[in-house]
Length: 221
Ligand code: DX5
Ligand code: ZN
Image (cartoon, rainbow, N blue to C red; front, side, top):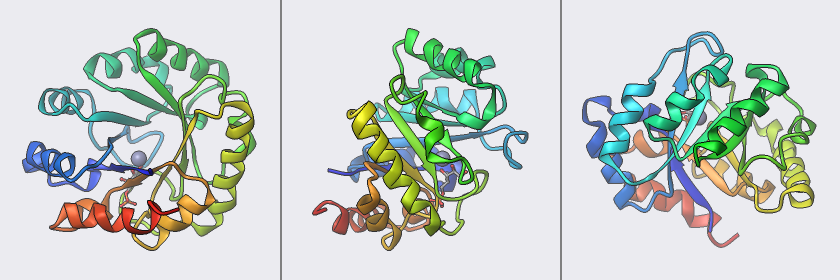
């Protein structure tokens, strides 16, 4: 079964606890937490104190997407704040530093992932595949919710799933950006195991219906 990871970037932050409880009750699998530093991406979102509060409010699996420069500096802080999985952008630092960040998160008992911007080729995951639990493929330029899905990323999703099948079959492929009822089946057909959805879930008043809609076609695939 495909996993659904609502992104709280599109949630109402004045009632974040209630928003999270709604998607948990609706059967969401992961809670996707977008962290932006205004350097790696041209936007600033949330950070460690919000993650700590989320950890107190829910038992959901917290999938933390770090859109920050040199994430090695903060990996321990995010792990201690309550992340279950930490995603590092491949482009955010030199390869050896990203590998060190992965090792640091693992040493603290966390799952790890690496993330690719749209212009980063699939082959860039080769060195990381044996080390991580998940590869996150961006289907928009990171930084903002509500953008349109980049259809030209579909072959890259397939390529990464293929590489993972050979090098690390248990590794999940997660897709983030512009996922809705139309694009979800395409991403799954290409090889996605986890779908991040911000606007398509929190932009709707009935979150259970929104999640059911994302599952409608993907669960039979
Ligand atoms: C964008 C973030 C996404 C974003 C997705 O930088 O990584 O997780 O919240 O939002 P939608 O689903 O609205 O494209
Ligand atoms: Zn994200």
